Amino acid sequence: MRYNYAMENIGVYLMGGIILFIFVWLFLAACRWCTHDATIRDKSPLAVTIAVIFFFPYGLIAWLVFRPEINTKMNRQLERFR
Image 1 (cartoon, rainbow, N blue to C red):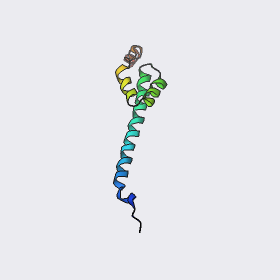
Image 2: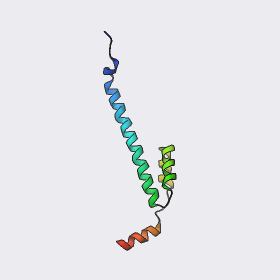
Image 3: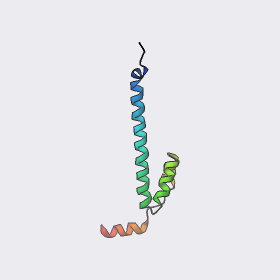
Image 4: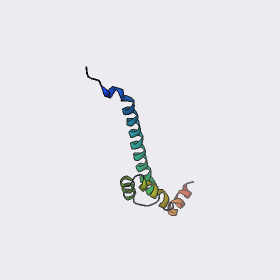
């Protein structure tokens, strides 16, 4: 009779799957947020998203540190509607 090692380590596999799911979810959420944030700040969403994808998590940290101020022209337009 052969011993099934996979059943013994089912908890390890389950935790690994959960951690992988959380990491992928955070990665996709960061990409979506950076795209939206770059659009608001009048920067290229494609360039920012590519930087975040290829240099994750350092690209995300760099975007948070060096991102420009929100466009004042857009702020003035938004003030008209308030």
